[in-house]
Structure formats: structure tokens, C-alpha cells
Length: 218
Image (cartoon, rainbow, N blue to C red; front, side):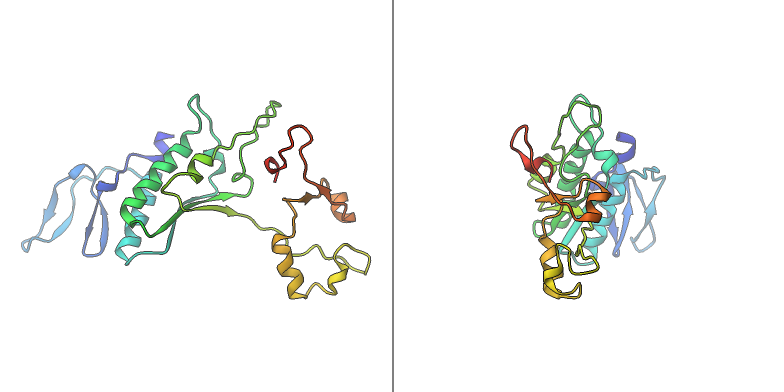
């Protein structure tokens, strides 16, 4: 995990004439006759994730600022890795969010774009039935402004003929029909348990008979 994120820090970067340069550890900089900075000597080759994201944050700041900034996207296999202390990648992303805040300022909206199968929690496939809301510390962090999700839900469940669940809308081209499906309930209120059920439009309500917590499965 440490090797992936690397050791780059906020103060390891310098901005020279609108160019962001990596100069870790306060390395001495070569100057020309006019006092301009030419470059860093023997810059360590740290190409970790932290260097990448912090460099991007500095670029946004140098460009005049941005409205929003994403510190990562769909890192499902990383955020779900567990240790005895919890989920170390989630902790690392929280630190990274705070450092990006220091670069970008208080008005920029900072977030993380979770994969659709990641954002609602981690369900280990070990037969335990456990559920870990591993991203909650990130979503609740004071430096994170929005819960991001990359998801591509269907905007229609249209079928041929007049004997299907959506036929009353008249046509698949009905704009109100498509708008209604933005919050149409699939994956939240109901789901298709199989392809056969989808073919027949046999929608099953999302429930939790064991604990009365259907939101776990939404």
C-alpha cells in the first residue's frame, strides 16, 4: 500500500513560471545568472499515486482554480483491502483529500468517484455475511464535499408490444418517461434476480427479512 501511494508531500512541489515541479526534501535548485530556477538536482523517482494527484491539484491551482476536484475513481480493489486496523487505502485517501484541500482552498468541492459496486459497502464473499461500510469514513471526512458514484443505470425498461410494465407511457421516445426513470427505483426499490426475470419484467422488491434494513442492499 505504501509503495502504491508513495511518499510525496504537499511541500515537495514548487511552482516556477506557471510550471509545477517536483522538488522533494527541499533539494537545492540550480539558478541561472538572472536568479531564475532551472530545475532540481537529483530528483528522486517517486512515481506513486500521491505525487500524481498532488501534481494535478497544483496544476489546477496554477490554472486559476477549479470548481471541483476528484482524488480518485473506481479504485475498488484497493479500497476493499483490509488490514487488522481497517481499510488502509481509505485512510490514505482521507489524508490525500486534506492535502488537496490545502492546495486548492476551501471553496473547491473535493470528492472521490466510487465504482457502483464499491460505494455502498464491502460484502466479503467468504460466507460470513458481513457488511463493511468501508467508505463511510471517507464520505464523512470534513475535506470531502460529495459522495461520488460512477453508475450507468438504464433510462428505460421498454419492450415491444402493449403488454409490458411501461406501456402506459406511450412510447420510448416520451421525454417524461425517460426522466421518470432517472429515479425509477431499479436497484433501490426493486431488482431483477435473473435474466429470465428481466425478460418477463418480474420485479422483486428489495427487502431485508433478517434485520429490516433494506438500505444495506440498495
